[in-house]
Structures are given as C-alpha cells and as structure tokens.
Image 1 (cartoon, one colour):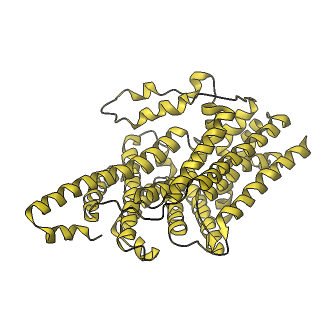
Image 2: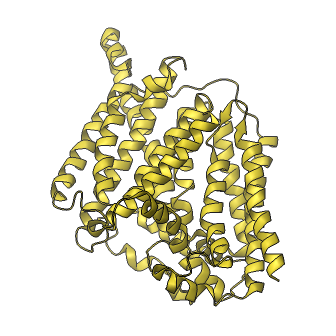
Image 3: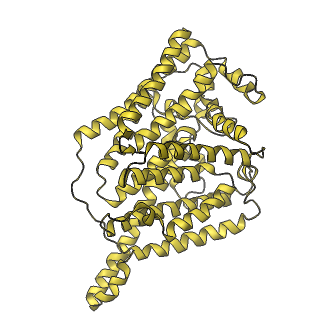
Length: 445
C-alpha cells in the first residue's frame, strides 16, 4: 500500500509541474495566470501535508506533536483514495481551461467602457477617509502583529479597515486598466504603476500588514505579477522564481514577527512550511473520519452569501448562516485556517467538486480570453491573486464570498457603474450647455 501511495503522490506532484510548464512557461518567460496559481496552491496546501506526514518530517518537533496525532488516525487506504480524488480535482480544473480555450475565441477588438477617470478621485478620497478614521481608531493595535489581529476586541474596527484597503486595491486596478486603455496600450508597466491610487493602497496595506493581515498584502503582490505577465509581457523565469521566493519569504517573515518569534532565516523558512501543515489540520482530521460523499448541495456556501447583505438592513444575518457543525461535520482548525478540500467536499461532494472546479476554471479562462474590456481584466487579475492563497486556506465565506465575489467582482463593477452613470450625466449636461472644453478636463487620467 505504501508503494501505491508514493506512486500516487509522485503523480500528484509531477502532473501539476508538467501542466505549469505547458501552460505557464515559454521561452519568453513565465505567465502568472490562474493555472499557475491553482497549481501552486494545490501543491502547497493539498500535497505538502501528505508528503510531510508519509515521510515523518518534523516528527520530533514539539509543535508537530498534535499534528501527527491527528495524521496517524488516517488509514493508508484513505490516503490513497484522497490522492486519487485530489488528482481528479486538479485535472477537472485544467479541463475547464482546455474546454473554454477550444470553444471560446478571444475578441479581436477592444471595447471601451465610457467614464471620466478623474471621477475616481472622489472614491479615492472617500476610501482614504474611511481608512484614516479606522486607522486612527486602531492606532494602539498597529504594528503589534498577530496578537492584535487575533484578539476578540476591535474586530468591528478591523473589518471596515481591511475592506477600505481592498476597495483601494480594486480602485487601483480600475484606474490602471483605464489609463492603459487611454494611452493606446503603449505605456510601460512601471509608469502605469506610478500613480496616486497605488501609492494610497500601499500606505494603507502596510498598516493592515502591521495588524497581521499578511495574505491580503501578499495576494496584492501576486495580482501585480498577474497584471504584468498577462497584459504586458511574460516575466523571465529567473525573476519569476525570485518573485515567488520573495513573496514566500515575506509571508514567512511577517508570520514569524506576528507570532513574536526571533527573526532569522531558518525560523522564517520553517514558518512558511508550517503554513500548509497547520492549514492541513482540517484536511487530515476530515480524512481521519474517512468521509467520502459523492454529491452534496452547497448549503453552507449558499447561506454564506447572506454576509453580503448590510448589517444595517439585516442585523440578525448571522443566524441564517448554516455551520458545518449543524450537519455533523467537524471543522478542526486550531490555527483558524480551513483547508479547501474540506470545504469543497462538505459543500459539493466528490462529483460536485469536479463540476465546480471545471466551471470555476472555465469562468477564469473565459475572463482571460475575453480580455477586451476593462472589467474583465480587473476581475481576472484580482481573482487570480486570491486563488493561490485564500481559496485554499480560508473558509468559503471569506475566500469565495468576501474576497472573490464581493471584493473582486461586485466592487469593481460597482465602481465602474457609479462613475459611468455620473460621467454620462456630466456629458449630457455639457452637451446641453455647449461646454465641451470643460468636459475635456475630466477625460485626462
């Protein structure tokens, strides 16, 4: 049985490596797309726990004692079944991209969305005002790391503060896409990035980072890599490896600092490696129960969408959200992170997960292929940024509902629709008053 397990582990590692080489790497360099991000997340969060457990790595470490107690409950047969299911899930995601690539052709002509870029400054001012207010309220918690982030007090303040930072991120990408369009797609990425929106986001993001919210910051760096490599030019393999190493190193360093440990290379590297292991608590505990269900209705995910309703309109919305414990599942997550395999299986079952991942990949690839509109670009970039991390290690009410649907789809759409409506009103007013020269002031990005 162990031989079969090691063969299956090897296949689950080799196949994603081959796929990344096939879909993401050429002589021109590396493209940070949804295939690359999903593959890295798959290897990091779904395979690392099994590889470590089967090879008894870090077994002597005190921090791993509870982890191995949970892992050793899993039978070899269950591990083998898990590896087969994991491989099928990965192949289903790739199949979604292959299908859409074959049956949906990219548009040849760019379709401009009309609005005056200057109007985005109003939203920038409002977002900075909100961030400034909540930053002031959180001033005693800034730069105190994980102790501040994990505390029960102040959660009602950190939520709007984080939302303001992610809103600034969406605003930055909308502005960048509009400016890129306005220059006839001739401006360089460096010049495109040098703008007041990005500077404002970085200033607020550093404060969020000081509270321990490293994945928000790291994901935004990945988004920049996606934007640069997909819509400008691929990144050289050397720079790509350095970038991935830098992002991983930053995540490890910030994680170490927020836990109050000594800052050194070895401890930082260990912190990066422990991330998928501790996220994997929910995975290995679920496998220990040997629960395999073919089809499930996503009651947990669907009920989580109630979170999108404003608390002022639905103050008791938390009472309508269905928890896995209500249906007999145990979300064993001592560190707070929840492995996506657990979330997928309790929401969709095995066959349902295959369908979900196929459709999810197809939608992402469709956005990438039909990139001739500003919103498609912004949504694709942001979704890819969240895909490699939060999708694999956060509960779906955070990863799918909040970061993907609310922040990456609804927020950019809301921004564009708002400024488009205002712009249309201004244009009609200027036309009626013959003030076209005044109107031209608002056109400059």
